[in-house]
Image (cartoon, rainbow, N blue to C red):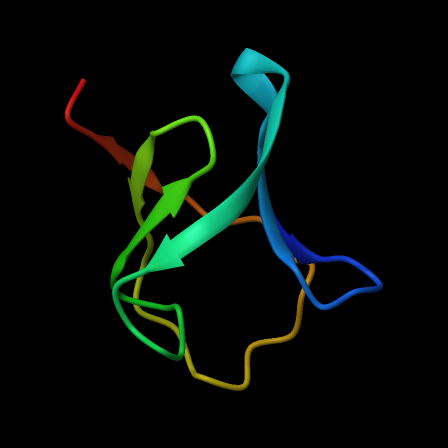
Length: 66
């Protein structure tokens, strides 16, 4: 799940790991279809979606570099 908090900061929640981490870097300015980096060092490949996709949203992201 990708969401934005009251301060406008993005975070990702991974339910299978019960992990929520801030998104600290992103490959593309509009987020979708690129790789994001989490505060814990994980990198997630996000699916292509419209730039105006509303948050929060549940997506199937792939973890890179396992």
